[in-house]
Image (cartoon, rainbow, N blue to C red):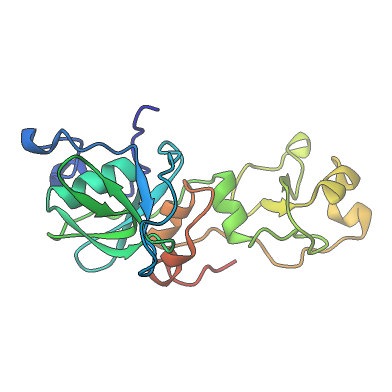
Length: 221
């Protein structure tokens, strides 16, 4: 599967962490992974990872979260010496090439500090909204499966952080294009726009690795 661009927070290309790879490093083969066994021999047979789906958290030299990189690019940064592994794969997976082996990373940190321009507005995405509401329906508290506009768009409601909430399919169907006052419903939490650099990262990542959480801060609804 072809490599995809990361979900950027700042201008990381100027930091020298784009897709350029020294010619001597281009032979790194990222198609076999072994799981390290705790002194019990060779471990399970190699498996092929879904490279296009797996992401690695990239931290600045100051441990500030920057972006979520494709696994392939994260390994290249480590091999080139531009980043170090902070947390490896919990299963102990190792990527092998013909000449070297690299621990599959979950979190990596840049060797040099990158200055990121401040960007205040967090883009509204389905992933970001679900993270903000902790995957709970704003009306009944059940498991959220979709997004609902508190004031329906057909009645002038905007598509914004303050008018969109996570919602279960049942409540979404019952609410339809009605106002909360017409149904006698109340929101469990008042929706607000999240703030902070980590929210721009979460807005583009469907599933965050649990090992990322200490670096992302406490999500606020």
